[in-house]
Length: 257
Image 1 (cartoon, helix red, strand yellow):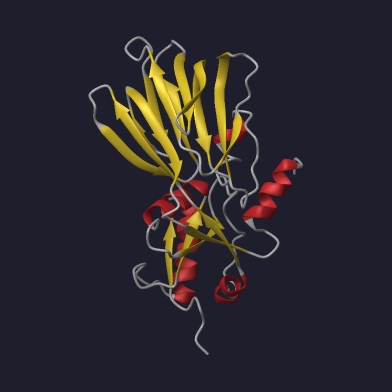
Image 2 (tube, one colour; image 1 turned 90 degrees about the vertical axis):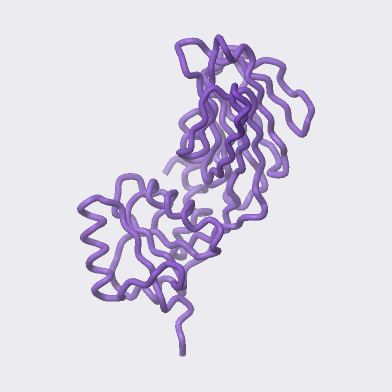
């Protein structure tokens, strides 16, 4: 009987540990071209997982990560034993990326996808002044802060959590809108938005207080307007071992372990 994940494509980060794991696994299972593979197995840390998800964003290929890097929140434990059986038993989580449309001072439009978050940052020593609109309604006429970010459930435990944003269960139809070191309004901690929300952030005094926008690792500088929404046309498939699903990991993070 043919296995559902018979053909595996392996990718690995440049680190010695990941490269050694790549050699071990290729010797056992071979290595297929990703275009013809049934699944992609990423060996490294969360950075490699994000790169792999971006590279295969529109292919529908299931991605299974094994931890051979630094941070491994999105990865499964490493083992060379019976990988086909692990893939068969794995649980699937569907991830919709964010779509960022940023317009800069020259009128150039930068379009990028983000799996974790879209973040705006001040470019100089001066705090950013930002206006926030949700679904074309002004919700905050002025936020003075180092920046602001919009995070997906998958990204809610990354930079969003470091900025004191909420952890979101992976299957929740929500986005986190989280300020970065807010000065005014001082006590504003952000908002939870439905994942159907159309978020617009306008930069005030952009010449004096320049702002950059970053979608995961793609940056646009000197932006004047940034639009963010969840792109429902793309669903990425991540595979996790039973009992170690992304849902379970996010739940554990909420209880501090």
